[in-house]
Amino acid sequence: MAEIKRDKTEEQMEEPVEIPRVGYSGKDEVLKEQVVHYEKGTRRILIFTVVGLLLGWFSYCYYGADFFPLKVILAVPYKLSECLHQALHEEGMYRIAGLGIFGRDAFFPQAPYVSVFAEYGMPALFGGAIYGSLAYFTGDKRIFTLAGYVRFGCAWAAVISVCTVALFSMNSLQVRRNNCLTDLSGLFVIGDFGGRGFYADYWEAEGDRLKEAFYEGIGPEEVGAGIREPEQEQELDLIFGSHGEGAMLAWIHPEKGYLVTDQGKVYQMTDAFMKLYRECLEGWL
Image 1 (cartoon, rainbow, N blue to C red):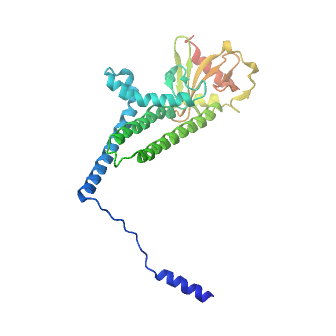
Image 2 (cartoon, one colour):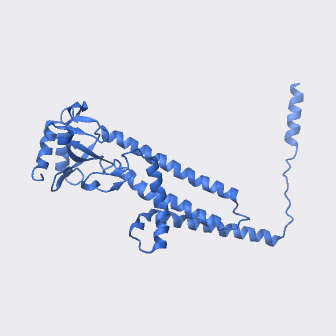
């Protein structure tokens, strides 16, 4: 039996492989024309997509555009991105951050770099998808079919979805780090008539003093929210990471010495930090 099986296998291996042939009964000129149209249409889609990416990246400029058609062209990708974020953000996340260097609209106030990509990168992706689609629909319908566009559109939808998930994941990670007061690198004290900041990247001596005071001993201790007196609390901008990867608008009680994060965690601060904070506060109230 083993010999019979081996013989059948050898016979199968010796059998020639037949490749099916597909005939073409049309004219060579028609086939050549279709190939030319396909190449031109593909180049046009690529060019429109690249232009759409650039227009989307600079779509925030629609605010200052006076020429209405240009304003519309620029506004579409930005507004689509904005609607996406407004639909997905939790209540209170999409807001204006505090005063100081973060006093501006931000998609992710706690993660400045993530917010920058959300403001510029996501509209760029929407721009590429929109204007690439425009080129697709204006192509030869015999070549660029609806079924082909479905694949094209699904590819863009997948890219935008993956980037959106990545943005929210990176922001969530940074929010957790911020609320644990990890790797503080700067602060901006806000008073009635101005403010003062300590930033490790710019003034090394002050930055070292800030970190030593902030993490003195066992550092900030989390306590219960029962000690809060909201009417006596003052705003305080905190910066985290060696390159400002994190930012948070917090509240601090100058007398009781506790700090409240924007997620509601309450920390009792060190005496050294409160002394430094009061020094910053002097002259600005």
